[in-house]
Length: 177
Image (tube, rainbow, N blue to C red; front, top):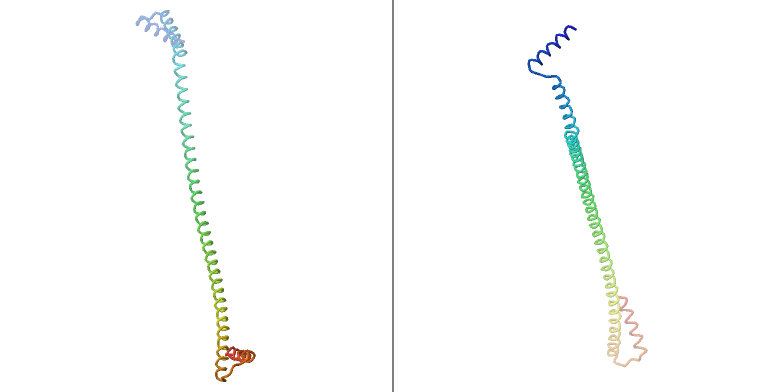
């Protein structure tokens, strides 16, 4: 208690030496508190609210920027995947086209070979037919010549029956050769 009394007397002496009047000091403290409250209520609080709002907007903007960055990265990844898929698809289509072209070429080649073989076969048949026809014509000519030569050698005119018999005989002999 003595310490409190000593302290209170010390404060009183200091206040007296500086010319402090207690009612005036209390009025100034109350005025200061009122001004501080009014400033806090009408100046600092709206300013702090505005600062908080701006910080929230900045945070939202940063979050939005991060989200856009992530979406951009995702879009870039999807674009690269799409390009890769399109490239693979294009390669596959090209390979299929090459295979189809080769198959078509092989089919065309086989068709041409078959047509060529058919043409050759027809030509051989035609040649054989012409050959047989020529042989038949030659046999007739030879038979006719034999008859004429025989008739001249014998020096007489042969009847149609004799000519036919000699022609047949000559044709058989020529055919056997």
